[in-house]
View (cartoon, one colour):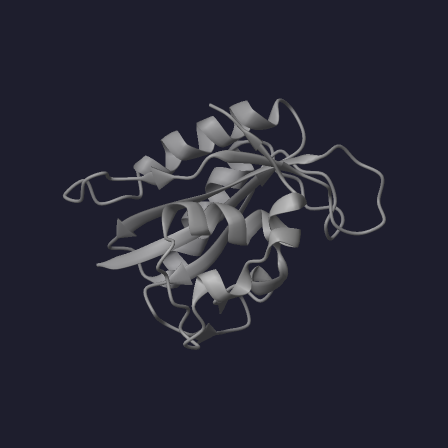
Length: 163
């Protein structure tokens, strides 16, 4: 059984509804023996990455326990994205749903398909702030404390969506 953290993001087709639907689908992957089965942060609005003009994103972080191995989980996450209309046209382009595996227990994984911890998580406010909301005492596999990565400037980049 592994404890996993995922980043969720959407900026097309009612992003908040896309994240709500994704959370329902994630419950199917979560081990129901843990309470709560799924922990989800608040939703946050953030500016898109890159130079492409597109709508702002809605982001969150989820945590749950799963019996799936990392590649099985990746496949399941990509199926959820596809079921919600995800089309992969451009890196950092607009999307109905993006699910990124941030952490898989305390493992470091490097395969052609999967890198865990997620390669950009330490620099992304839209990951760090919601992650700290649900796991403030978290230490990354490299030994870095999550709260040591967050400063006031990062928090200022986001707008929390009260739900």
